[in-house]
Length: 276
Ligand code: ADP
Image (cartoon, rainbow, N blue to C red; front, side, top):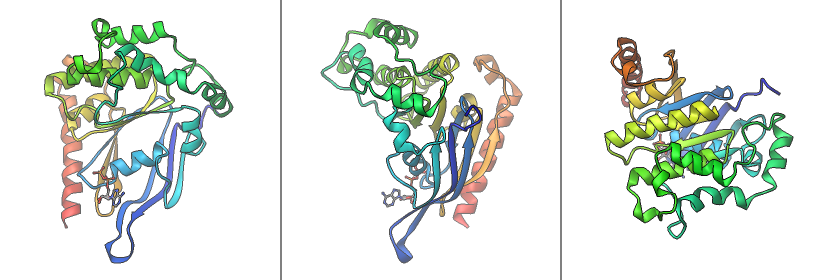
């Protein structure tokens, strides 16, 4: 089963509404993501990014086509706690400390580990982390001083960091992130990108990441998937062949900016195609 992709979408169509007013949110979408890759989706509003995420996260079923997570339907992968979701704004429970917020999910569904073992043979990354593992992840994410604080006592960036630690801490096989940094200022955003890459380097979770930022997509990703609207579809898949770790020095290099220009050019075409 080692060759089973982490994510697979085949001939996926999703239509909302009927007749002349129907919206083709996704039209014949094919996407294969091998395990451990960091893939970003980028494209103008309405091109189906959120729809694609909802299908992968098992929150909706496609009207046609096949969606598989490690070879099984997303609902089955969700029941085995193989999928983690980081939404745009961090949904932390306000009455629990940061540490209790990030350790709560693994206490809730204890049968998930066995269900996962039936789907993926190697149990490596999903071995349940202990409270001290989670504390260590919080320290790595710069939240060492905040473990016993309530969410209301933290800044927006710190809350989002806690939400990311919580998602990674569950050791999901696939982590789905819907513009997790969009509400943050640029400086905080860059520092969270650093921390996200550090965690990802260590845990090698497969990540599907939605962003509107070209430089964020290039910096983080192995693959950038460019989408276009009306109908929502994939128009380009760009492999980002840059070394890791991707630190500040790389941002000053010409090849980093060449990738930014390439993605920007493909996005422009997606816009113009949409407007035509
Ligand atoms: P994006 O995330 O790229 O902005 P979405 O996936 O949210 O795009 O939406 C794709 C298209 O499908 C848009 O035209 C949107 O209005 C439409 N759409 C999405 N969800 C629904 C829904 N639940 N009901 C009706 N239309 C929807």
